[in-house]
Figure 1 (cartoon, helix red, strand yellow):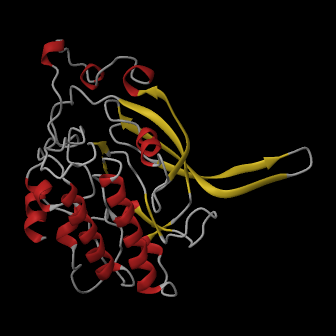
Figure 2: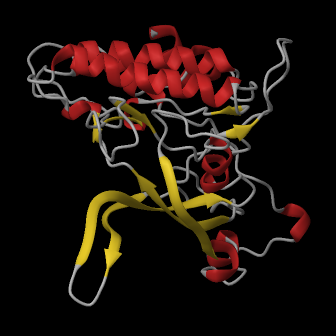
Figure 3: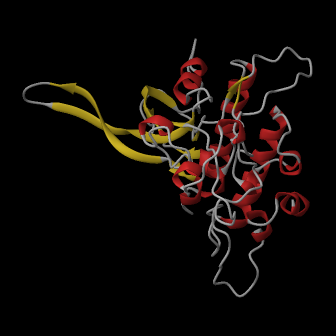
Length: 291
């Protein structure tokens, strides 16, 4: 396991239960993922975010826990190099550079970041922006993005938490009144790479990186400075740039014959070129130049 391998399951949330009746609602998602050991848990970020009051347009947490880790719970202390029959001294182990490819490298990677299996119950349940129907129209799409943008603003300026992973996959459309507690149209989700950077005081301060050993985010929506420099400290306006790229993406792809999936590398059956194909694949610097 060398990625988050995120999986989400729709779950029944039991509201009341007795011998004769069981009242429940299908408005909860159980999310399983493998997080980097040194990154703060998403549950901790959400717990802080919704205190002292809930942030409209931000996903809520019911419960979360962390169980097995990869290094000792699965690999039993074995490194990939040991599994490949390579004998390396501890001083020779090094972290893999972001530019190295596991599939093309002639030598087995000699170390991997340890990850922890996390489970978190989230609500409410939303739909991806790519599934916004023609009946919902442009207004519903824009309101969904606006709700997520306002939640992102409050998350940073009032709670001191920077999201750092804005993409079309992390903004959902929700019913106007999903559970009686919110009347927003959109939902900001996925705080896996969020950092507690402190409430800004008006001065220009350096924001720490997410801590991941590579660029974080989805390529078509990464801010241009991050694409040019993977070691650059993330800033609030980089997330705003990602929101803009989400809007551009929606304007071009939603309602068209092209796939709105940002992870698809091409292969369109259309006779004319995919308009943002160069945002999906290629070297990070080349993608930055295309943007």
